[in-house]
Length: 220
View 1 (spheres, rainbow, N blue to C red):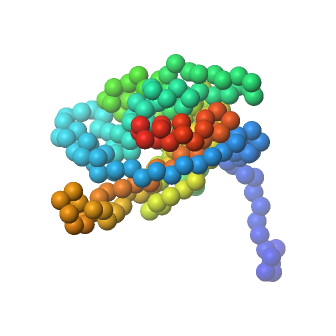
View 2 (cartoon, rainbow, N blue to C red):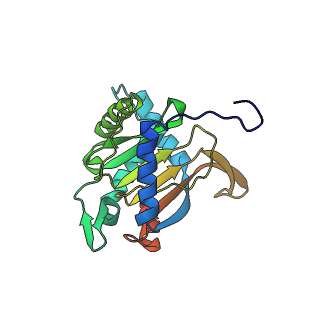
View 3 (tube, rainbow, N blue to C red):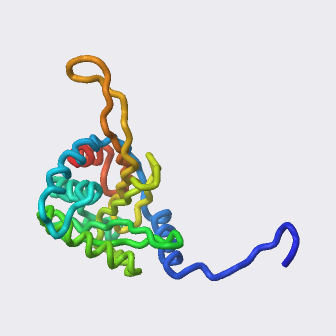
């Protein structure tokens, strides 16, 4: 049609309908709470630097190194490898199944998955994550009800802070933003710059509380 109100209509893609269903479920059952905390991203960069010199089949990116740290922290924080199958039952998993948000062309969003991520050495975690991410980029959405934490990486977009959404039955979604330089006091006096990134975690308040969530983020 012509005129100032012209428009076209088309069916919402199936992948977006699936995501919309999960997000609607989130608004129905999750009680969200959000905590923001700065990360010393310089430590991530320094930890990765020697790994780049090694002849590894699977080279961890800075983001995957950060994800591995999340998995290691979950070993001592069992609430963040748990879910609520119903309002009266806490289901605590022996190990962490991690979801990784993957963007596809057309602003499509799917999940890769790394099972028992907290049991894997860095090299094995990197290999498993890279393989899962490639399958996700090819269109395989690996989201399941057994994922407890989802990680979303916005470092390449220029976004510093975002408020992630928890998709049940996950207990938390962790956002990491674009690293930036921040002025800070130097140990010997004066002011210098340190590399930071903002970590933002939204968690299900039915399952965890603020002190426990902050302790988990500090462990990461």
